[in-house]
Length: 377
Image (cartoon, rainbow, N blue to C red; front, side):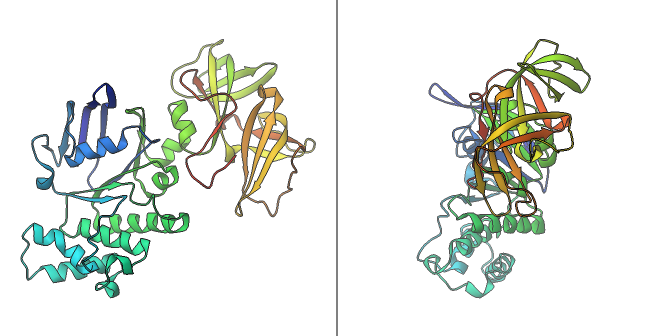
């Protein structure tokens, strides 16, 4: 449905998007995710026609759209700022794009009722935006964007202004509506949870460059770059070097500590310096003595403990890993032992859960990267 091939956009000396290539199949929910300034909104604006690429091409429904102005593209949009007309009721807001497109006036009331029903606002059709909650305003904006049956729906961080609980509810609501209508959707966000929950496919961008595009489970389990491993999920990093390399398996050294890992991306020869990435939920934490052995085991000391209801989050300093501080999630904080700050502990994980990448662009050592407000270290 959407094909983007080698698209670049330059503003002065700043290269906002660099040779981006990606696609969205008909009916897909595609999310472009990355930190602020990565180029995701510029990419969305080029699809919408608000910006013109310096190079490359964009096709929608097989048709190249370079010369087609935004108002002639069959695209619905929902923005972070919903831009509902304050003097209009919910029904009048939804009817507006139909009137602008000169729909048969006899059909407009039925379409408005249908789409207000789809977003579960049938009983609030006569309320103005200030009389609606934030979530209800979002639903009006969705109905308005979809009522004229666009070929493509574009979402520009429409949930970022909502509180956490409402945002999570609306993620599921967006997904339900998109699946009901089977409308091709491209969403941009910096929220990695939103991307995982809502998407058929995810594109991760950094500094205007597409880092990886894949299905959510594959992207999470098989990141292709250190940046993707850090950005998607809560991931701790440290440095090591390759001691032995075999297909799909590596033996690493951090000082005198030997670790088992799986390779990611390019083949790694013995002696190669690598960046290691380890997800918080893959690490088992327990007492120094008495834990069953995994392939990898190190000892550390608890530096911080945070109770988040459904899980306990630990930050543990590990001298054997060069002083790296690893984040650990314990998802059974009631049934398991609780470890106090400064208490010695053992950390263990399977070889398949330790990623090793050729050393390259990375944050400082002993860091943990997270993209959701609820994940802390």
